[in-house]
Image (tube, rainbow, N blue to C red; front, side, top):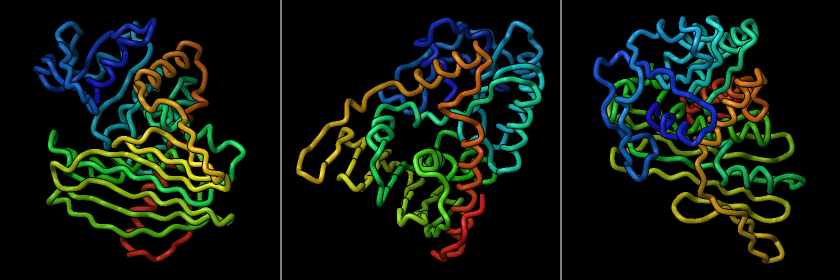
Length: 320
């Protein structure tokens, strides 16, 4: 993901990469990034290399840090950076527990610095189209799906204590976006299967709202080699809105039979996300399009879903 961010920064004006920090002694080789379908290599040797994160946060010439570390390290490193006066973008998930997420928000407030979480889905055209289409329309049922093969590129991902498993690696995107669109439900239930030995972690959760709306979030890690896909189907009072990364652009199927494409689903969400963060950092302005308080709620909700899965479909109150 760090390489993905570096590639995206090349499309962001007025941002200079001051350093790349990794404890690996030889990270500066050509690599490809996450979701990099073209497998375009990036030569990292042109960047200053630090192995000690303290070199970064103590450097007065560095204004902001972009944290793409194992999920269990996000909170501690982000808090250190904020305390040192840096603006912080941290990849999703924000943290692996709600208390750590709250501590990050408190550190940002004390330091008067920008904290933003990389919930890039908010910046992808296909999901922006859904948000726009739902304005003034009552949603009745919403289904969000996100699946991939088990990650084989790093051992820490296979340790669910460090990564949070498929729920925190994949479905946290949909959890965040559903909360953004609909708010928190009254209750939820979940089923699924988790096997750290095989690095398989799947879940189907249903959220229940007082209005009668139900939101289903389903997917996770399947056996290695399973193809990545993301999609949504939202039934509304005016028709159904649907998108699939497997080949369907965002489309509104109106109840009168009109089929309305909602725009091109292609766009660099990462570049848009990083450009927005850079603007917020330059102005020391809070990221209203992706506020950390909502990111913290997504962490708490993902934890609730995992807990509900252990109760095998029992409907439980939502307590965020």
